[in-house]
Image (cartoon, rainbow, N blue to C red; front, side):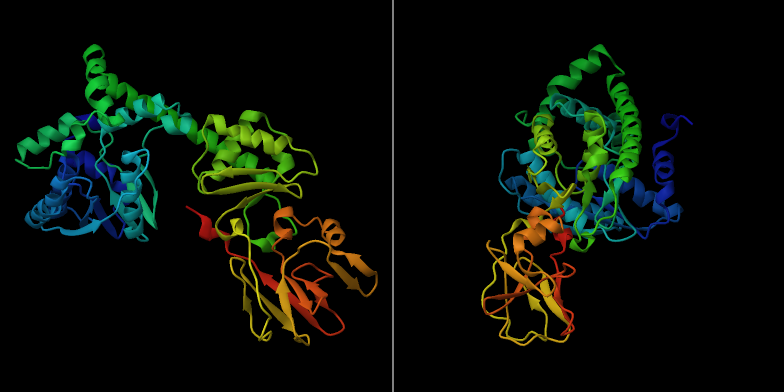
Length: 442
């Protein structure tokens, strides 16, 4: 079916067909042309079709004085259409890219309000897709970036959907003029110091003068690249399935992969698989920073290399790759005695410890390895703790935060390590519940 031959309301309804069972459609309403047309289309469609509940949300960045009048404008439009409006004020963090900072602030709010079974609808159109492709091409993006904006993706607990990606700006303008709509013209859209504005005003017009179908062709190329990215994702899932093996330290609750299956792949497949694995966890590194992956792989066998990324670190230890973020990146601190060992003890930046069975006689304290610790084992006599940890292949990054139970200067137990975690004769064990790694997700 050639959707361009269908009138705009019918095309929008067709593009949203698979989302008709959602509980709520929320329109990201800036007050500009695109979102105004989208809001008007949906409000009219709701009169004659059974649609999910509709509402709008306006995010106010406060970056320019003129924007202070925009919430009132958006409220006026929504009142005319009988659609509820939610206005959210955000503070944009200063940084090298104001465009990116504003986008991050906006999407943080939109993500927070998108609940389970909600759909957030945005008004990006085909011209925006072509602009995105050019922008990312100038930044040296790979297949994933050049695939452009997806028509849908997860957001918050729901989904973000862009139902106008096959519609041109000219079509939106024609609809707005026909229905005598009024909208905000953001003066910053004329500021050509912003990269996207430069592309929109200086680059795309001469391209379309020379090749009238340039934007349609770029959108088609983005679609081809999305298909190619889908194949790369399938390959990554196959490769990761070989590396996602079980291990004896699963109680750590950390994401990890066996290194050997990945190391056996070609360099390109390694990068593809690891990018797929890291994408939900952190901003992916650019091409130059992938040297950190090579350094990690090629380090000496007994080394414990670390690759530092934007939202965390990738460690290599005990034959595996480990993703660390949040509290796992903080050095744990403990002080004082365990006053009430019958109750769990919360450890700053390091989860908590507790006993099962009988509670050993005190006074007791929890500390961390400093070096030189010795532990008495009933069947082996006194043994150096470092050697005991080596025998059990405890990952290097865990050793400094394993809770150690002392009575005076006597090391009684090492939490969670079988044979070292308690006293069989006295029927007690020391259990450690590490920090929940998910708090470090972006």
